[in-house]
Amino acid sequence: MSQHERNLLGCVLFDSDRCLPLCREAGVGTAHFTVPDHAAVWESIEATVSRGRYVDIATVSDRYQGDDPLFLDGLIDGIPTVTHIESYLAEVCKAFAQRKLRGVLDEADAMLEEGVEPTQIANQLQARIYEAGDSGRGIKIVPIGEFRQPVMDKWRKARERGFVGVPSSLDGVNRYLGGYREGCVIVLGAYRSTGKSTMIRTESKWQAENGYRVAIISTEDPAEVDAGIIAAGHAGESPFALDIGSRKADVDAVDMAWTRLSELPLYLIDGANTIEEICAVAGTCVRRYGVQIVYLDHLQDITPEKLSGLSRNDTVGVYMRRLVQLAKQHKVPVVVSSQLSRSSEQQNRPPRLSDLRDSGTIEQKTRQALLMYWSMERDSLVLEVAKNNFGPSGSGCIVEVDRIGNTEVREREFFSQKELDKPHED
Image 1 (cartoon, rainbow, N blue to C red):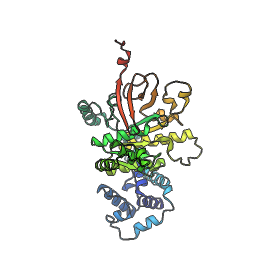
Image 2: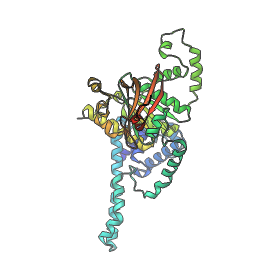
Image 3: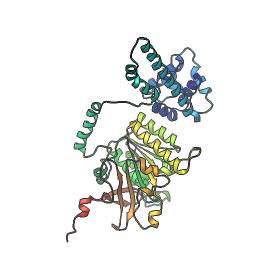
Image 4: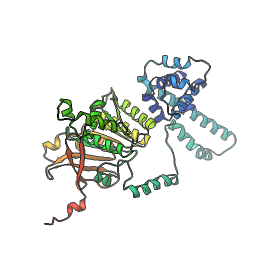
């Protein structure tokens, strides 16, 4: 078992961005390590994190006080591959749970020797047995009263702001969704080239300008492309005109706009393509930079992993479940764009949740969903609140938007069901 501990520590030291969030999610602590040197290394890792420093062999060695100065190097040299981090982690957590369970059983034996009634022993140790099975994953049994203060504070703040979550630049979205809520996955569904990426870039820039810390992970475009489009839009210039060297485009104005953008807490993630990379780097952004909302553009372009025996539908379902875990673990909203199938166009009807491509799990796991499409009835682009576990949804909950060029989404008009039901007046 000590070898699994060594492998786990080696993985964290070699690639903390990927491995440390997985350890956090599993609730790993010093008690998970049976070898004193291993526990000391983990304490050094925790101390490095608490100081806001990046975890690697150099930073951790500043805190590690072991006798062998080459011990940390040996941990990294001994791991065959970081790819097996989840296997090492599972073995370490399993052994930790077994040790806790044995301790509970030893305590039960001692109580039996003392003549304590079996029923009384079972009642006293039931929570301890449950905790042992939890393996340190963070499951808690909490009295309802402990939630009073944080929830009431959130609702009182909502009375002042008009919403509970990170605000949207669109007032209608805030009124229907309450902003983008912490701990929730929100899906933005649309056809290709309808404006998903434009919506995300616009929302993220507006939120950063209003003091919120934002991260964008794009599986579709390089981060450099996203940055250029945001900067061009901020200057009121066309990215395409700049790409083709049009003399009508004001390059200096874009450069000045970029200087202003550089001061914003807006982080673009480059190179995260698998679901594990995405979740790991998102967790790093939350911990290191205090990011308050994460955008993923988009779900279907996540690099497929080899998940044995799973269909495409099942694989996308796995992605959604991992994103839900990400949002819950870090208590941030995760806004995910998703493609729509073309069946609604073929049937000449507005899209619905079941048109989200590749997996019914997208519809099931998201707490809120917005569908963006062109409404022939209104002759405009609309955002329909197709799912909302916290409030109203459906065809009456629609926000009309203007799409301006390639760079901006702006609210045009807001409709509620009551307003839609009103008789028209001349």
